Image 1: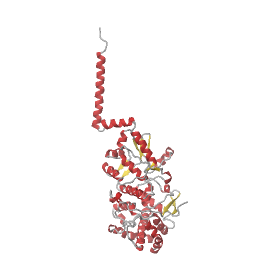
Image 2 (image 1 turned 135 degrees about the horizontal axis):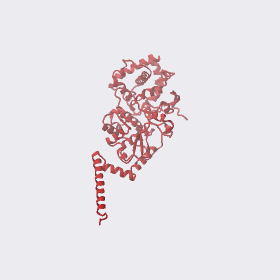
Image 3 (image 1 turned 90 degrees about the horizontal axis):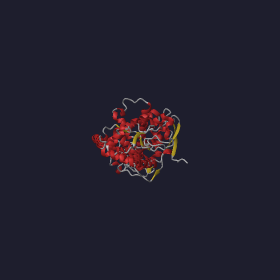
Image 4 (image 1 turned 90 degrees about the vertical axis):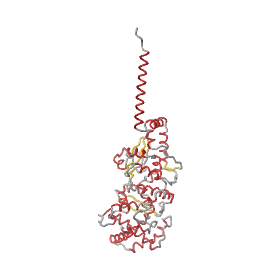
Length: 436
């Protein structure tokens, strides 16, 4: 039986689907053992949403903008301050309970006002972004970087509102949707500009949405019905990408969802098309394309923090980045994956990407492992440790690990072969038949 705390809303995108929003939501403050490795990755820069960072003086400019958004929403919909308060107050205790730590002491009136202004800002932002030409004087367009930073801040774990609150006030303001679009459709349309997922809204039907960070995680995982079993045993690649390449492993980039759709029947096997899709078969390791650009580390760290904090969530996303950390030890590993089209580096030098990946898993606590990844790592290690592959890799490391050494080795082989041939001819001529 479906949880009574969940409600279904209809989503119309190329078809009909339902998405459940759960009032059983938990929003966490990132613990120190994770936060200390990159404080800024978890901290909003320009706007506070929810109570954790509320009241910080550096967000006062955006607080004034929230009030303008509330006035704009009232004019757009005809709802009043009393309408908002009437819907928010019965939910106040439920909303407060979503926050695991008591992070700010707000009275009832101040708490309700904060929720009202934060939701108004989000709804106005989504509506302007999706359906209207942006007013030239709109504050987020004054400086080019500001809107991108707001995008980023809205996805941080500590900067969340329960999704059911946003949905409740959206339904109050737009009983029949906004231009026949549901809240979830507006949300997808807004965040898809980040190019952070390969799924469509229709594929997340029947999955619960707690908040935007949780939704970001869902974007990058297969559908719940396709998630593999997790077991208590763990194992990871013993060798880096370059070492595996020397042992004969071929690296290829996984096809995107659109490529799979275009290929049609060619890809009929049951496999996901998520950003976490890994496959190893016949000596070929298939890895999804990873674009390293500004803001990527923040998004990855916040999803991993969510999986670390919420014991109910399996660490599927974290598994992937632990494996990636084992594959990448040096810049040579990054450069190999760039050459194969797996890594797209928009950050500049390879050292930046290497450092980022190697630091992501500091402080991470492992809870079992994706069974598919476990089997993949077992096969990958066995392949690299096979007699021929191991000795081929050893030969490459000892004699071909640089252009000069490789050239010298080839020259030595040629000289040795010529010397051997000369010796053979000399021996044959010396023992040949003597003339009478």
